[in-house]
Length: 77
Image (cartoon, rainbow, N blue to C red; front, side):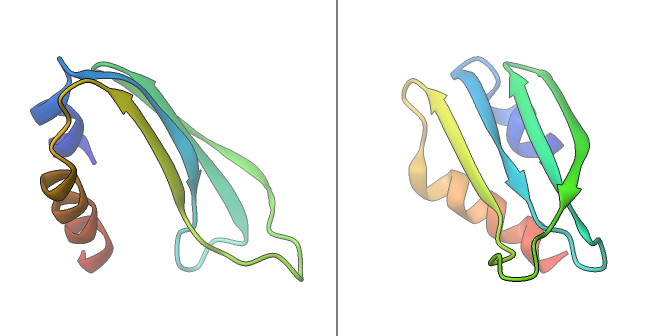
């Protein structure tokens, strides 16, 4: 994620979301503005809740295909 943010920081106005990490029983809230980003542990996943990551990127001239490729590399790691 750091590489993705560093590469596109000038054009990223805001980004946020909930991330599901393997082995964690709680959600992780991720948010940032330009190069400043952070994450915090959130509430536990509910038993009937789908454990999936959802991210929103707000910016200008963002290369959708490149962002998706960089995010997929995070999943593969």
